[in-house]
Image (cartoon, rainbow, N blue to C red):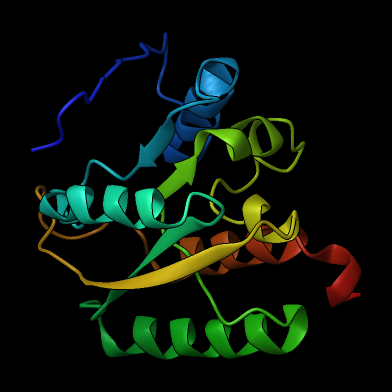
Length: 174
């Protein structure tokens, strides 16, 4: 349990996809979180929400760094995993970053306005903090089974998602 936890539901008028929905939420909350922190995650069941208290403890121990969770154990088909491995390799070579973040993060409130102000936030939710050079730590987490079965992400969407992620670092890539 998290004493003092405040959960706020921000309704959207239409489905904007997870990246735009998360960007919308961060922008709506940015001015109200200066003394708090923000926990973000996907609602697909792959993120282990029982880990939220440990993410909070990481922030309490060091409120100057955000926490990126990275998921272990992709369960897609071999061709998908092969292309994902190739993307991670290319991403590291082109950007200088090893991390491929997921949407589960713990963000100090002081960093939220900087992230919310990034024009890149609507393109790809989890990459702008890296582009901004914000300090962070990483925490591995086992990937859980999705609530709705298989992911709708296919090879084409993976390539599109990867290219958008690389555009965040367009100066380094070029």
